[in-house]
Length: 480
Image (cartoon, rainbow, N blue to C red; front, side, top):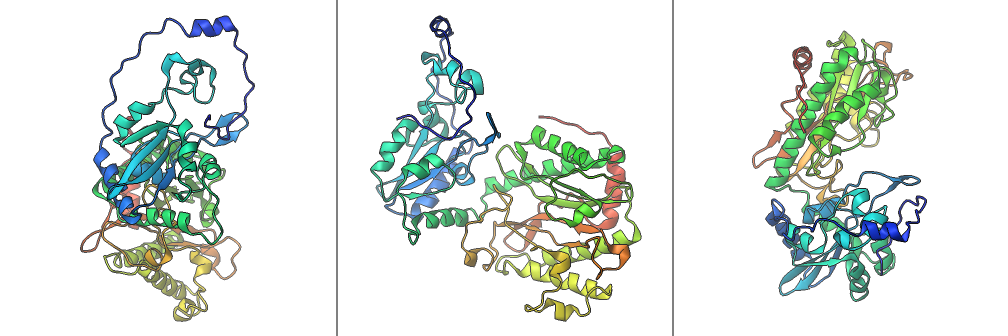
């Protein structure tokens, strides 16, 4: 069996026999040494043991997914499935991890694409996986040594493996191959959903390595914001803002953790503005919501709303200050044992009262009632989400452990209130229309409270202006 998957279909080239013979000869012998173990391999093994304890005696299958077609015969840059990476540290496409019961725990089986080197013509003829086309891969024995798994096998053995284990729990939706080979479930069967939920719940509390990686991603994101600020006097379009930040993401990290939001002027009132095709004008605010995804795949998620001129106008400062106070109130609610929604409620109280003082809401108390929630016209979104390998991390965790749960030491969440006054909103005084402000930080729940991982990125209005002035006079350094 060959490991087939959906892939681009370029025109096939017919290679002459003599060319193939020529390509198969006179290559320098490859070294036989195995690669060193992955740094922090023991951390990944510990995570597999945590998952093992939750499903004693059951086979678990976690694929990483495949490259995705962008257009015709081109693909997006591959990014592994978060659960698979969290358990292995493996960045290669197409791989599948299986945990097989053994003794009191599980044995890790890793299915990977073999690497025959120059002994098989596919190194030259296979446009999708051939080494001369896409670069080398580890292979079977090399992967076993690198990732510290007990068993490593070629992908060609996956079909027979799954056929013998019809009761296996499977993470679905990442690999069309695994979904096709694994047994179909009745709609009421929750085994697979239970595995996905448990993986999200295990990832809710970050270990020391994860916190270290998130700190590094935040630091790179700070540099990216300063790259933008440094260039801002000459920037005329949102695409330039996106380009400046995204260069930092590729130099310092793997990529951006999500589509960069570079929203100037009224575009800041559109929550997920990623078209980034508008103008950047001197009197505008620039809402920059961006995060570097580190080479370890952990991502920051920071928003700063910057006055393009370097100083807020009176109306901009009024709105910005209200959002900043709402964020400060939300931060005070972050501590172990607090309800996950406590920061959101605190932020909304501050915003509603501020909107009442501005004459936009008739009554803050009335607007905050569950049956009304009038403040949502101007705030739109929740104040927090979990953060880690995914920008909206642990999304498949059960509601009672996430949205309706409590905060625990080691959780990392965003705190990001905002106000958005649409240009055509007649409930808002004209001087505020078209102003959108969001302030977002990445926050670690500690034993006694919280630590703002992005505290080095100024957010208080006067501090923002001083930061921008200071940064514009400094030089940038890019290092890979």
